[in-house]
Length: 160
Image 1 (cartoon, one colour):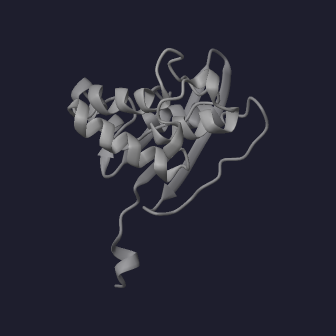
Image 2 (image 1 turned 180 degrees about the vertical axis):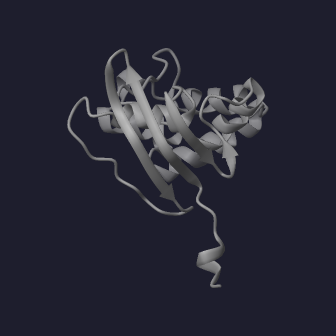
């Protein structure tokens, strides 16, 4: 067996269904994504793309099916503690970037590091500066969202 055959999927969906009232938006979705793979989710408006991502992230429960992230169940049937652990591994960038308008780009990135990862201020600032540099915004650490272009705001959300 080759090493590639031995890797388990980082994200695995089996028979995912999601209904809102009488409308079934996801109808038995199966998906397996190995670590390091880039996957594009393409579809018409209202076809369930965001719903599927919210299910993977644990923000939404599927009506039926199993979600596994890094070998752990993540389909809304886990405990609150397990859900918090999942959210340390899975992040989302929303269509609306959801940046805090009163915080700088650095402050927006630091907030999740301090609250979710429990980092101290100095460590969070160092990591935030590194993440902003990776998305080409090293010189925008102290800029608030209203001082950034839409593309720059999106990159802050990615860094976060």
